[in-house]
Image 1: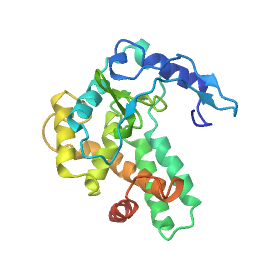
Image 2: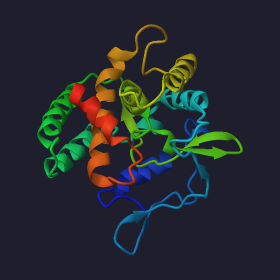
Image 3: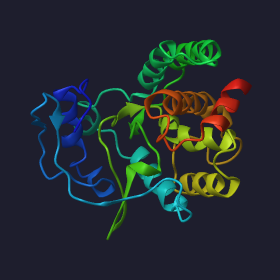
Length: 245
């Protein structure tokens, strides 16, 4: 089931895109290529049952994940691949989080609303080095298959700055939520595979700083508002990270 705001034409374009030769080896393939109307008026798509990675486990395949993401970002952006795809949804996700935060009765609301406003302004005017991007990447968007890891969730697949796909692990590492070994393994594998979001050598942070801050802000709001008891995100650590911003 897809969110009520899902656009049928955009979802169809995304389902078509993951079947293209440049992307198909990286994605779990849908059973049906067209979205279906659900009884409640939302759109539905049909997918095979797969083993989804669980965030918080001890055996995450960070290196394989980094290589897979680099392959996605390196997919050739020919007309057939990128033309029907919308822009990636990172800034829009920040805007939605800011709207939710404005409506929340919480002691941190003024500071978080101020932070979210500044981040959104920067995100809307930041540099763009467009590639194909997942749009909402984290470990829970990966499936284990007999052929290795594959990507899940086409809802935010689009074209944009690939640094946004690294934003959650980068932000969680900066916030002290993700350990050094996991982050370094992921980043090294991504770079070794030719991922374009960051330079092959040197400090990656000039490219990751804004997306990482945005990811921490969005995760903080989610932990406080959407599913406070079940978000899986450490709210206290994220709040502290936002306070430092």
